[in-house]
Structures are given as structure tokens and as C-alpha cells.
Amino acid sequence: MLDQTDLRIVEELSKNSRITMKELGEKVHLTGQAAAARVAKLEDQGVIEGYTIKVNQVKMGYFIKAFITIITKDTHHKPLLSFVETKKEYVINNYKISGDGCYILECKFPTHERLDEFLTALNKYANYKLSIVINTQSSND
Image (cartoon, rainbow, N blue to C red; front, side):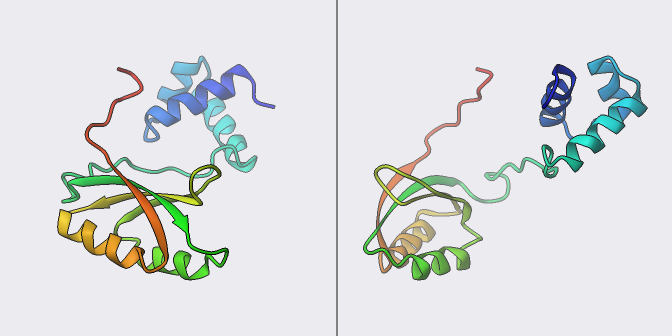
């Protein structure tokens, strides 16, 4: 069970995973050594699974962000999933869902032409609904 200090550590690391243990300790009212021990414990427990970076997709050349709801044509999903696996360049996340579809793909594309090529190829495996992201709102707004 996580206590308030553990929750604050996770919150601070979510904001900045490059923070030093000394700085983290100051923010959660622990010594740097105690903060490091807590972080190690959270890692061992699997609460913290890893550390990552946030990449600006536009600066990487991906100007179009899209969510694609996949509606499979049959119950055999392996061909679709194999196709998606070959398109890692464009697929950020693949979520298996309940509701209106079977999967939602979170994707990025450099051009409308590449998006169209992707959708044309995808349509061999499943039907889809496309949503293009117009603007990203921060949860802090």
C-alpha cells in the first residue's frame, strides 16, 4: 500500500524523472538517501515501471496526430495485429477496447498522403473511424 510520501514521489517523478534524489527529497521532506531508497522500493514493487521522455512529434516531422477506432471484420485479429506491428513508425499506442470498436490506434503521420496510404492498407484488415487531433489541451489548462 502506498502512503502519502510514496504518492508525492510518484507525482514529482511524473513531472520530472530527471530530478536528483536530493531535490526529490527536499520536495517530499526526506533526505536524498531516504528518497532514493523509497524510489528503489517503488521500482522493486513494480509501481514505477520505467522512465521515459516526452518528444515533440511536430519537431520530429509528424504533423498529423490521429486516433483510429478499429472495427474488425471477423474474430480473427492476428492479421490486423501483425499489420499494426509493421507500422510502428506511425503507431504510438494500440489500445484494445470495449464499446464501439475493438482497438483504438493513437498514430502520428508526417503528411496526409502517408495517412491515406496507412488507411488504405488498414482497410484490407478492418473498417475504421478516423479522428484527427486539432489541438492538444493540457490537463493544467
